[in-house]
Structures are given as structure tokens and as C-alpha cells.
Length: 194
Image (cartoon, rainbow, N blue to C red):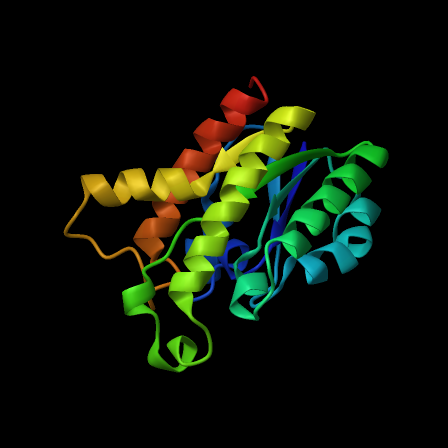
């Protein structure tokens, strides 16, 4: 069974080597995970390439995770909501099971200075929280499997307080990717009853 992971730099693995990325390290028998993350992509970009990167490949599942770049570029929460809605329903229409992936949080006070000058990351975090709440409700309403990477990373950070899981305040270290890979494997197995 093939799972295409559609997303941004969280999915792509910005700041780590390809073999250290969480998608490269998910290990579930008889499942293949394909990385279709693009650094800096927004949910609008993801929607625009959904046909090429997902539907044309006929996977069994698509894991959709994005939204933070929408907020970094000044978007309100309505645009990613609309795009998630469209991507999920296009997937269903094409007999592909969507899985929503809620992106992990970040450390606003530790964001690279050039990026911090570009956007208000405290505001980005507020919008991410609002989108996260909406995605949980959307998932529940439409019976869509949902993986909350945000909640998992917060849990791991609380357990390992002396470990820095970010390379630049936003993107995860290889250790962070390892935890996300293990969590994803367990979550997918539980959601899809493997």
C-alpha cells in the first residue's frame, strides 16, 4: 500500500539529510511512504499540485500536512481551511483515503533572525493553534483519520527538556525526525488497523 505525504518543509525534511527525514524512517510492513513535500509550500501550492503529485499516482492514502507557510506569508486561517477541505474531498472523489497531519509547533523565540524579521511568529503560532482546533473538528465531522504531530512533539519535548529538537527554531533536528517517524508508524497502524 502506498501513502503519499503531501506537504511543506516539515514533510520534506528541511535541515536534515534525506535519510534522516521522518518519512524515510517510517517502517510498516507492506507500506511505502512517498515524500512530496516542498520547502516553503503553502496549502494553496499543495492544492495546485494535488493532481500531479497525488491523484495521478493512485495511492491508497494521502497524508496532508501544511499551513504554517500560509501564516508566515500573512494569510488568515480561512485559506488553509478552504484548501484542506478541497484536498480532502478531491482525494475522496478519486478513491484515495485522506489522512490529516497537524504540523508540529515551533519555538518563536528561537526562529532564525532573518525569518523573524520577515514575519511575526507569535502571530503565526496563534493562527496555527486556530487551524489545529479546526482540523480536529473537521476530521471528526467527516470521519477523516488525523495524526496530531503538534501534540506528539509537545509530549516528547516535555519528557526530554534538555534536548533541542529544532535546527533553527522551526525545523526539526534528526532526533526530532526519529521521534516523529516512530510516532507516525504507531499512529498509522492504529488508524488503519494494521
